[in-house]
Amino acid sequence: MKSAVYPGTFDPVTNGHLDLITRALGVFDRVVVAVAKNPKKNPVFDVNERVMLLKEVTKGIGNVEVVAFDTLTTQFCQELGLNLLIRGLRAVSDFEYELQMNQMNRKLNESIETVFMMPGQEYTYISSGLIKEVASYGGDVSCLVPPVVSKALKEKFK
Image (cartoon, rainbow, N blue to C red):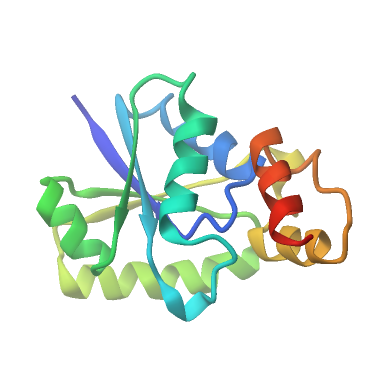
């Protein structure tokens, strides 16, 4: 069984993230969605809320496991015995950051390979940061995130 880790902050999970998970399952037998604690990003949702939201929105998708982690991604992969990472690329600007991340991961653990995947064209402009900004001003993000996430954002930004 070929498994891969899809790490991220997922604050919040978007339709673009779900598209990538679905696409990844076309390539891999199992996807472990790894939710990074990462307090440096000042998340709107705590790690437990993000895990809960991801579990809720992926419950109808087979072979997806959602877990939290608070170590280096390479350490987490090693703990799981997995050596494949999935990273999403929306635009050329993402590539520079992801290239640096890939090179650092290789330096830390050369057995880990990164597979870059692109979401569907309709999701290339979506980012969690933009969604949080729009939602914080009361904007409607319901077409960009799953319904449970839209509801959770409305609650956070009351």
